[in-house]
Image (cartoon, rainbow over all chains, first blue to last red; front, side, top):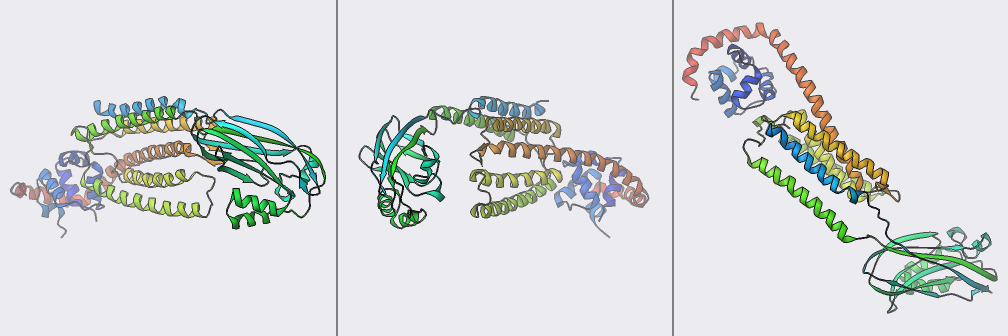
Length: 64
Length: 391
């Protein structure tokens, strides 16, 4: 399942996948895979992404 | 800049090593051969050969492995029925036997082979070569039991020949040839080349260790890449096991007898390695997040070309296939294939990734409507985000 919340949060900060990847310390393909729903990140990576985007884990990764 | 130079430095070291090994790769395995030829006159009278056991002495100057080659040729076609080299026409057998100065049998054979060779370890000293001819089964079996093989085998061996027709009476001449040569011209030269390989290998390992211990140059992989590398390792491992199983079965049934056994099993390792790297590249787990693929691609192309050159040299010098058997030199071809396969995979992946990036941008536009509501909600949620930064 696609993670549109992550994509929208990234877009809101006007960050490209590469920008977010650089800030988090992963490859662009990893961010792409998370957004496409091809990869489930570990809790550590989720926390790092949330910190960069200024969001909570629930806001980005909790499915309602 | 320095980071880009490191693969280049490694490639240069490998190329230098290869250049140093060119004399070894172009060497000829032919060593100085000592050949003896002679004619043996003999008479067959009432089925009995009146002259045999012609002893010929020769000296071995140095301990080592020697290739022994021998042949016997009847003079003129008329003689072929008497002492034939064709096993289907054998009516008398010639046996060749070599004994050392103490009379111990060190080598012996018999049969209808025109020529044959084998490798024998001979110590320094005097040797004697004897030829014995047989026109009846009993004398051959007795001789074979003593000098050539076990008792049961001697009977079986004799069954393979037709002694029913006794050689015609008359005077005959048979030409014989015998040669021996050391397997290798100089072990000291081989040791030198071996030392060169070891030194260059150590040089490459040292550079790789320096890179691995230097935080700036060390490849950094994210968690997804490490996960994919684990999967790649699993596939590579099982590919190797399956390849070894298939190759082992093929080897056991003699299907691949034209290929050197070492090559067969090394190719299984190459298969596993190929699966590992191609899987890693395809799942974007081959290059670290701090690595540039271009410099690595240049290195892969250089190593691939170097191996292609060595392969061509191997074919030209005739060392790739010796006596109808594919030798270990074929590994250069496998190396070249592996590096070019990796190069092409990286190239295709880079092209597909650039295409994917364009598609992602298009997809962003398509998803815009769907995302809008989420953006609104996330913008609203920014106010509370600050409280959760310290998660």
